[in-house]
Image (cartoon, rainbow, N blue to C red; front, side, top):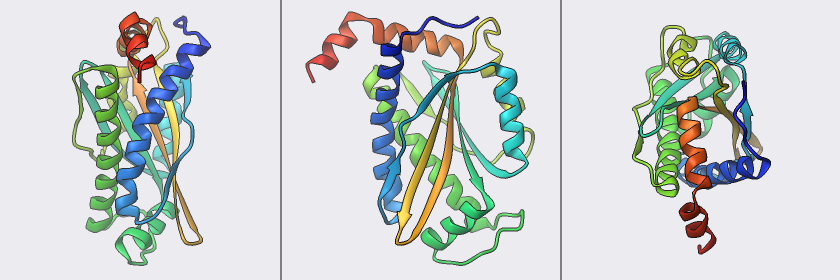
Amino acid sequence: MELQVSELEKDIIKEILNIGLARAADSFAVIAKDIVLLKVPDLQLTDPKEILKLVTDYENTHVIIQSDIKGDFNGSTLMLFSGNQIERLSEVCLKVEYKYEGELSDMQESLLLEISNIITGALVTQLANILKANIYGSPPVAPKGKIADSLKDILAHHPLFQPMVFTVITQFTNFTKVVELPLMIFFDTNTFIKILDIIRSYSFLEENNQQ
């Protein structure tokens, strides 16, 4: 079963996310020491089984950093780092050349956690401000077990409906180098319903029309 969401409501949700990501890009640029670009997010209502399979596939090829969204909303963000991306980030942000062979150095793990913390923290702060919600991001972690297991509460919280999933590509340039960092944002169905109720409310639309 799929929630009824109009194209206008999808556009509003994506624009809200865009505003949050713009602040995240500015924050990330401090570490990247260069221009950070964020592509327009893609909003999907996807079958939980497909999401769990996608995340499991990424686990085999990427280092995944997870941060949960708590408070009024229930969600999670995953930042996905390939070996090539880790090497480029090390070169650009740490000024060291390090060939990634499946194991992160302490400095690299700290860097990935800090990048995730900055992007997720800025995004959550903006979402809280725009939607007038009491939400916060938990400290990011690099899970050692199956990440798909930690998402089951979000994806199976209301199994009759499809959860809301955003996919975003974070991109920054440094001279001739380009680094793209896929970001996935998950919200459970109850959170999606809360967000829809907020943007459908007269007060929300009135307030944002005046800005």
